[in-house]
Length: 551
Ligand SMILES: Cc1cc2nc3c(=O)[nH]c(=O)nc-3n(C[C@H](O)[C@H](O)[C@H](O)COP(=O)(O)OP(=O)(O)OC[C@H]3O[C@@H](n4cnc5c(N)ncnc54)[C@H](O)[C@@H]3O)c2cc1C
Image (cartoon, rainbow, N blue to C red; front, side, top):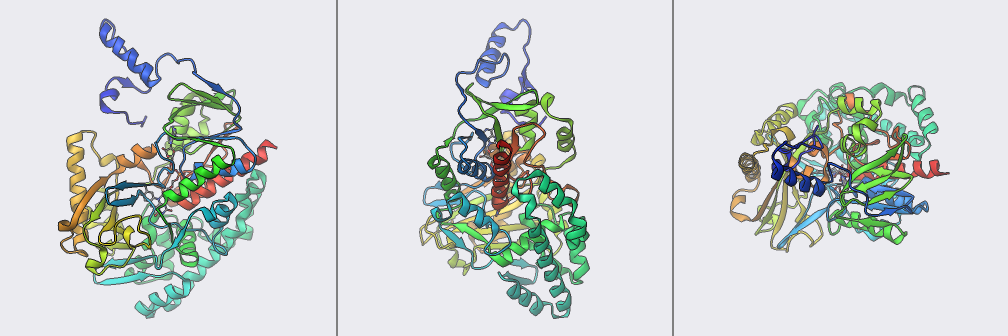
């Protein structure tokens, strides 16, 4: 099992049971005290029993907050329990002196359709006007050896950029974007899947081979296979698939459909941030839940999902409080949800098999930097730069996963280049560098871990210095983050940022409705997908399903 405990405790604990050493009375007493503090050993009696919630949401990431809000809108009395002191999970930010950083969000897609269907869900939640949306002027700048490409918005603009660079590939370029639009149209036709009616969803899925033929044709393809069908030039393929980094595995393994749908959304409806960081969105959701009569409690770790005779009955928290409810939505990852909170003995075999067979997304590492000069000092007005050391994504992915970061790819997000004074004073800059990183690479030994972190930070800064010469001399504040940091703040298994890895063989994600009656899931691990926007969609779907079931 996988849950990391502080090393000093994990030495004494095996699984979740205390190991007592006979004869060592003092030691046993210490263990008893520890077990009481940790809530293991004999189950303490619950301190409080509260029964007036219709639905309890575990975790306040985008999936949890969206589920909570839409449930409250459906008239349910909602309780959201969050272990961290702040709501939002990945969708959060923090302040250090003069500087502020978004913990994760680079840019949010809003989905396809007119204006973006995610915006419609946010409107329905009643918080659209409670946040200030910032549309990014361009999606990013890709820097490759010997060539730079601006990743513009708008299909026509983007096509023109590509055709200008690779005129001999015009036919393939046009055909690729036609395919992208077609896939998006067909995915939009599947809206029956999103409406919370399981029978309708099943029928819609079964009819795909007849009704959505293009989608069916490309359903089992990797992104690389699609690129190879339309393009010859390796550099063109790399340019078109640059945004693979937002979805996990490189094009050779990434599920083509997820890429094409997301690319369509970015090109048609833009990339977005929020004034005052993505925290503004999380806080707006939390406020809305409370406005609708719900409750949001931070600093409250859920330690158990109560299941009786195959049906959820409530949750228990680390403080020994017990809350009963007919519905529970878990925004925690499925490994924690089932192995730890429900318990393996109460988890259906189908889920155990899924958890055993599926691989989480590769984690991320990076560094948050506060600079004593603005990015304009280097002539940079970009918000997002992708700096690729080669044209070969497989090579770079392998390098990053083996801690050879300087042979890989770094995304450079200049938060202070947003029209928002939240991140840094005008004469300074807030910059975040991100790279992929394997959770298992990171040592449990503190000294080695710190050395690994220093190596990662140095490598990324050295890379960034290719574009920002002398960067090191301008650093006022620096803080590294690793897969363990992500795990610590979100409790996501192996610090996975995007739920299960979006490889072509893992295209079927967990359903929101679990085989345990009354237990639902929301967030990155669940259909339809990871990301700040899709996690909101999953919460919306879970809420709709519950509302339907509750009738
Ligand atoms: C570095 C990084 C960069 C990213 N960049 C982007 C981007 O540019 N665009 C984009 O769209 N997406 C991006 N993502 C992905 C996106 O942030 C996530 O997919 C999404 O926010 C996850 O939402 P979620 O609902 O799954 O919940 P999470 O954000 O994973 O939050 C889960 C919440 O549940 C809480 N919790 C867990 N267990 C318990 C428990 N037992 N009791 C109480 N609370 C619990 C956690 O504390 C946490 O608050 C990025 C992610 C990372 C890490």
